[in-house]
Image 1 (tube, rainbow, N blue to C red):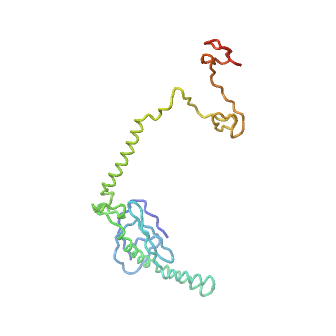
Image 2: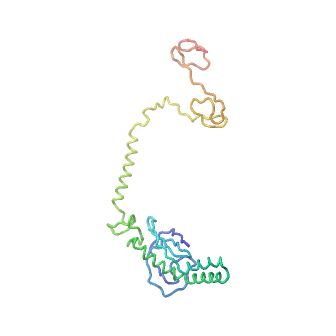
Image 3: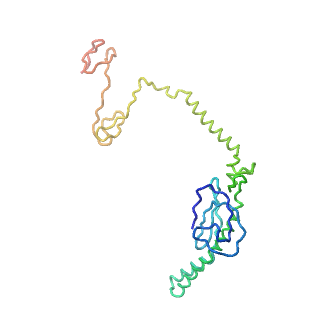
Length: 253
């Protein structure tokens, strides 16, 4: 079934599409007819083949975008599946024929896989470009610098880099302008009381400002009283004072 995509940087590899050393899933090596012409293409691919046919997906070595080949039916495999299905219903000699067809399909899978892989390469290779400097096979839409004739890892697109640099500088300038403007002009830090949000002493839920009961458990909230001031002169009164120390006015009980 599907072969895992390589984790290493994929370069081109020469694939002998007819020999026992052909690039194929592990455990699928077998002898076949005389070797076909070697095919040079990327080794960065997935094998989506199954018993009824062959299909491959090739990926760009730079961005990972891919192209999947057209599904090629495995005639022997498809026929074996039909005979086995009929055998499961009818039994007897039909079932034996189904198993025989399955073994026949496996015997010819090697050459069939080689031929299908060669066809898939011929179909998908025109959709990629090979960089003559690093050897990568890349997609022409995103990762190929047509002006330089190289992949964008080896010959970056200066227009793309210029646009990215301009955007980065614009972000830096926005930060600088924000720093030059007083963002806290309306806040008097000397009068502002900065403290952690009040919490319920019972369930530790956050309390909204001015709440008299906890919204989480209903526990009454004791509101700490702030400083008191004299109604006559405006001076601050000490806790428990009955008269203003500034003007002598009485403090309402």
